[in-house]
Image (tube, rainbow, N blue to C red; front, side):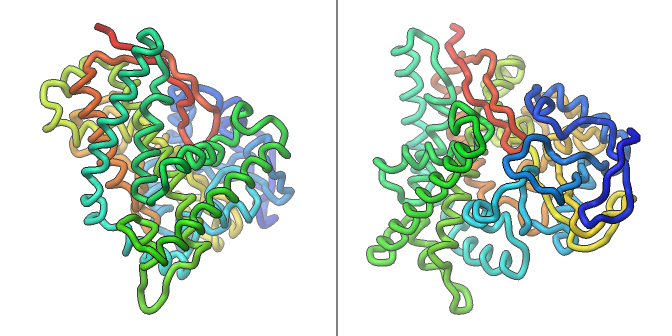
Length: 433
């Protein structure tokens, strides 16, 4: 431990920062393998650890004194299940963002009961496994379309192209917009604003100054809410079989979702639904390239082995690396005294490599079964509603991809530094044969 001392968010007794750095941009600009070595050191502590605030934040907060790092699997699961002690409403990111952005873009994942309970019931009434099965044919058709596009791009670009742009980001874009009912002409612009919502650390996309970033985020939120309001109005007049119609019609105990609530969920689904699948796809193909014996195992029985393979790809990718909570009251976690107002950050990328719960966690093992990864959440009230949609998409795409292009490999990825999404920005690919 260092001698550096700070105060908790409520100004209570002094406590020391841990000497391991997980707060700097430099740390979050390293590779996942490098970060995992650091997380392993923190897991060895056997508890949660106290760290300085994330550096170079978009929104400075003089009352932000640091955060507790939850790096062990069991501790993370405990936090997710103690929603009375650890709140989502104050924000789910390590970084501070204006309250307006939190309200406009996080929907149910940034809420606590009783509001969360009401909205999740309404959303779940429209977002059921039955509906997911109903759209499975669309997912399969889009997987064919996306692989067609990738093959054409390889031919056009001389045998080498960007897997992210020509495949990974296209499948969830088409699927989410098909599900929501976004017309073809508007989904490309919606996809651009979705990228802004997940890559505010990328100067190429949003600019370098705080003013440029805030402007880009504001424009993205405004566009998405305006589009959602237009679609909701249209569906109330002329219902169809899409999710916007289901959300507009959802009713429990006489209550319906407001236009703003539908807009916030639209933003959440567009951002989370696109990016999680995009990152799992890219990291999954990286794994198949790095571990060719796993590809061979999967190719021997694609249909039968794909469900287990998808679970391992999602664990390996851990597309959402962190979620934050805020302590509602003075309490205890892993033997540490937590003070009301303290930030508590769960590190999913660490928990998915925790040797005490995942056997051989550093092996990419597509046959792993059971696979107790927590990429879709550790249980509790915020478990991912879209987990089946993500699984359907990955199964469809990799089945199509490996059936038609079993020799597709990738090179060195270009990553976007950040502490929330595990973003592969570009990924060169080619056929090895």
